[in-house]
Image 1 (cartoon, one colour):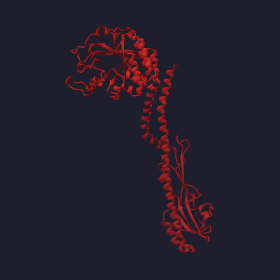
Image 2 (cartoon, one colour):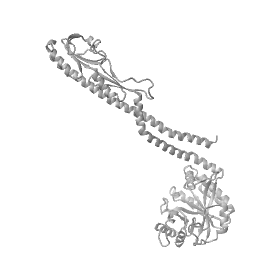
Image 3 (spheres, one colour):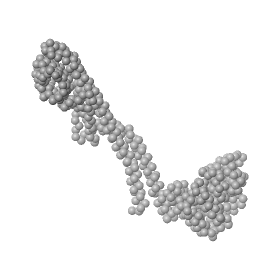
Image 4 (cartoon, one colour):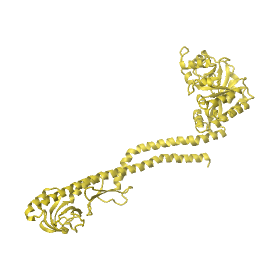
Length: 534
């Protein structure tokens, strides 16, 4: 498998993974959030249930405190009052009095109903405390229904008790947990659990059940809440419906960004190198008109890239890619080689200008001067004036070193022009700092020309400044007779643009020069088409 194809295959995998990753992370985070949501609901439910159980316990201990008024009194004396209190107060199934472990009186069962063990259907717990509570699976009177007993034993072996019906707790737990499918369980001390809800069936959902336990800070009461996996899945679906669109958008954006990044990091460098080796690049030349001599005085070399299938890659795209990928120097050297081949066929007069665009990275490269001198040596048989066209940003970095390089090349007969003047970051002081020969006015200022009598202040200021600095001026992007006449009236020497000639390949240029090189511009020609179309 060719290296580039292998890289592209890897790139596709990375792009797919970059799209899948946010989705997987979204699923993970929403699952975590769903469990967090469920846990918070469990905490709230546990706190509510504990609060209710504590409230019932408070009522039970208050009742026992009230019963202590009957201490050392026979049951017959307060039997009626005992029954009335047991019937009128909420929660209670029965209340009564103890002597040791024997129940001496009860609001529900009368006098001497039996022992405490018989009533609660188990042996009393050994707590070592004078007071205790215990949850029960049932009692003698209602063996199938849970209850909670509260006992206070006095030093003289008498005691009092209160029995809360567990149905109150079960009704409250059902109200809390039924909507969410909870299985709730509450236990007083080490007694039997009072439970509601169904257990989670095995493999009920993709999520395992969540169990939460809590303890009362006031009484020995513990609560267990089990949330089934189906409830967690329902919470997850709710969260997912909210976040899934955002996750999908993020996934798409990440795939686009990754694809663009990989295209720049993998494709362009290899494609440009392959295109150089396969000679897919060619040079087009756009003629430059001299108003003083009324002849074609030069041409600018413009690199073009045509793919094997006939598609053309736009220069702004592949040049930006070459700069980003560190390929601009090899690409410029390839341009110089192509130009050196083309000009061997030219028949031009001495001093014919050849404009070569120089990238900032190449200008700052240690081999820049050597590259340009080698190029000049290759074309020395053709009487050309090499003009280096620099962008303003080329002068910003390493200014002193750049100035030395330009002075060295000017000493060897080359000229220096600032391309697209007025659109970059160049300080006006650079016009005096660097040795320059030409200013090329950006087409944006040329397009501002609307009439011969009107004014374009910035354009006029650039032309005036150039004349004061004794720099020749070239107007590029000239497309109409009006623009041409405006520039000629203001002393602009060189004209370049579609009004004069379109860029053309080498063979077309040679034929065009033979016919139009000494032909002046005729302003009566249509403003809407090139004067000399290629």
